[in-house]
Figure 1 (cartoon, helix red, strand yellow):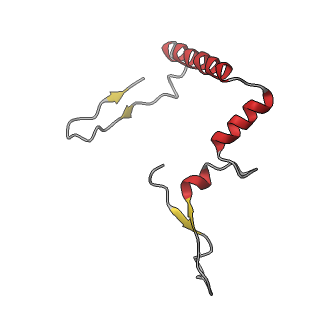
Figure 2 (cartoon, rainbow, N blue to C red):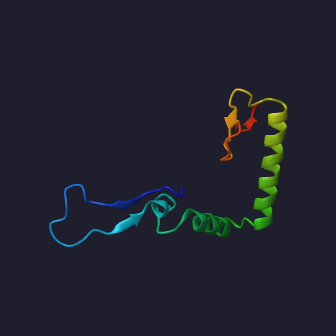
Length: 99
């Protein structure tokens, strides 16, 4: 996400008079389309509205991670998990995380 561009809307055909304003591409994709909020703030608003506590969210996240680890150990996602080469910036062979 560090390589997202800045947008210069309506610049393709040129500006007759005045100037264009740069729009941060990162802010653009992280803003909820239904309101002027960033997605993180939107999540907090929804949690507050429905009475979801931080502890409940943490419990859900922990449970979800445990289920994922169990499913991976049981090879339920064998066809969906691919080997991934992770270069570390050195000239040695990158480590591979395989199924």
